[in-house]
Image (cartoon, rainbow, N blue to C red; front, side, top):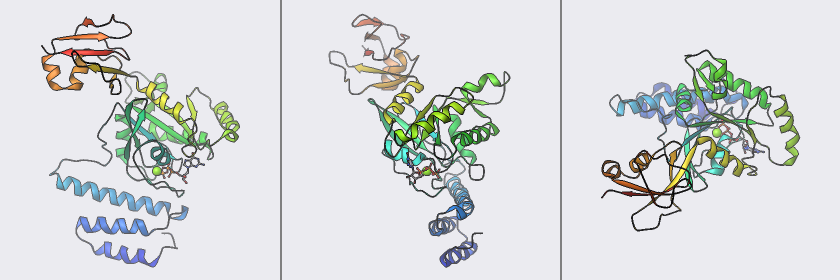
Length: 329
Ligand SMILES: Nc1nc2c(ncn2[C@@H]2O[C@H](COP(=O)(O)OP(=O)(O)OP(=O)(O)O)[C@@H](O)[C@H]2O)c(=O)[nH]1
Ligand SMILES: [Mg+2]
């Protein structure tokens, strides 16, 4: 127990010991968390309080929903893809989410700030992609739900801090993931066929590369890495390389943009539908409306591989930039 806690903390702690209802316990734990000063000496205590708090919250939630378990780590998908941002504490995950999305998770120089995932929407070209801020991936702190979130996501961004031994951070992160049966897609060849691992696409972001003065350190870091990684130097604070980063995310998600055209009208080129590469006309119909899916009769396509307005079948493989007219009569 850290020695320099304010007297208020002990008062609230006493009330917590006496509290009976979950709602009261939750309120008191929240109060304790806000009282504890943020510094290295209180890291463990804050992690422990947050663990207790999220356990209580989950219990309360389960109770409310008559047994249906809804974890804080279950983030409803929105937009063209779900991208989850992970990494050690203090590397700047929340700062990146704040600078690129409408979400406002707390950013703080003290470690262990974020304790529940927060999704935000990031505009890339003209499509929306979901970017999820997460609590630190830390052996003493992590909750199992985070690994489920990582397994479900379309893309994982592993963020490292250039100014805090990024290579060691990377090794620690990969080891922890592996202990939870998760490995980067590019390591698939290292495991036997039929292994119980989940292989996930990973992009490495090296944050706090604020300006050119950091380039040399970044180069050294890349050279010391024994294997080929796609590493992008970024800065959540100065915005360095964030446009390149967005483009990379878009490419990695492997999505195409197609435009729907009502019969006899122009297509709205400002509002694309984002679909996985390999999607067909009927997938687009399903995305627009259930009625289209059920009643689709014909489709015409204007695009790179089609003559203008050529009739296509329901299983026509859509291409990036195609304009599609769907007819139900
Ligand atoms: N110089 C510099 N500082 C940064 C950058 N990004 C974040 N920071 C600072 O790093 C500290 C930690 O940032 P956070 O965004 O809270 O880090 P986090 O990874 O979300 O931390 P946890 O929530 O504890 O996992 C804050 O003081 C930020 O202002 C950056 O690109 N450059
Ligand atoms: Mg954070």
